[in-house]
Length: 71
Image (cartoon, rainbow, N blue to C red; front, side, top):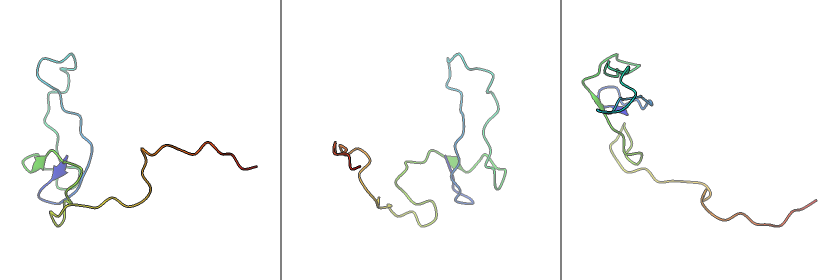
């Protein structure tokens, strides 16, 4: 989740209604500003600071690896 107030991204555990895990009844709060009012689900593509789409850099992690071994 992303905090719209301080633009930090942290993982949170949220109980789904009707699930077995009902002991998580308190709402999550931001670890920086300690507020739960500004938390929203993060899409993983939008920068929390500038609200622009981020571009992935680096190698393709889903690409098939070569089968050659060099000794």
